[in-house]
Image (cartoon, rainbow, N blue to C red):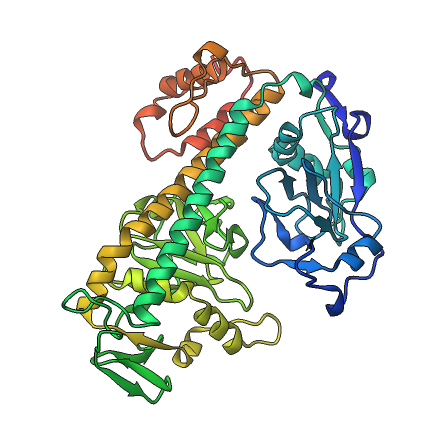
Length: 474
């Protein structure tokens, strides 16, 4: 294996620092017609770029900075904070002028290698382990250029066929784009029904603009539809607060707040009931809505009636608060928790000397409008399918990501090759064949009798199989 590897510094790959030592731009340096996007480490996540919070600097400020200007197909890696996160600045990124701050580094291939392949290799467990080993023991985790230069990748990377990995990633991106549109559609419907009060009346016309009766509410200081009520999140009839405590399980994946980015879930560590950490103590349920309690932390988990797979797979951190909804109230509470109004109110009400956030009693300070049951049912009939499609796409992305991460090390050590004649693309995803490894694994699993035991986690079995000697696999 060692003969197949080469350090980055010997592979013709150029490393370029962000603007280290340069003063972070002041307010007057920002927002000149959105001239140049200025990235901070928070914009680089375990899933690539995150543009939910962006800053733009002026043309004058951009011209005064020395380093950190991106070119297409550059790779950005974080060197402090969440060390080792990478993102590829390819044609899919909708910004032409981009510069990175300190705490990141640019990895530039030039003509010597495939940026897509290098991007995948830098995401692989093989490289992640190298990074963790190199920075272990440091009080403040940092990744200087000298360490990055020592990272080893496969030597003959130019001859590797990366099409299958690229297509898996492309399908993941497509699902993310679909989800963005679905989330925008759900948000638009919610706003139209419950902020503008233009839900359909008995004749199918917009309620408020068609003369629907409105009454003034003293608590909200605004008019709301007749027969609707205003309660607080603490005493709402639409849900109950989920208490701490979990049912017994053998092995599940623990979702800490760090494993949720917006509405997207990145699988955390596998834990068992006896040895899990204290915060792994919230039980997911069907028709439940979860949000991070911490201030300035927009993290949501929505588990619909069709998401039993999430119940079977996850345990949730006590850093989340869970709301147990009914089937008809679930979509409405999803919309409420997803709204900017809720997040602003959560940040305003957050307290605590060490880490600001909210607790259950603070929910007495969160007013919520309660529509009538017939409106909740109509809204649920309209929106539930959107939420289920969102979660279906997220589940598929997790499976595709696992497949991609599973194939990468096999490609690196030559255990897998792909037959071009049998490599076909259907409308959803290219079907891949890792025949030498998969056949051996399936044969071993049948011999052990694991194939008939549905409760045995397949990923754990693969880890056991990978750790065995070749003799024991026969």
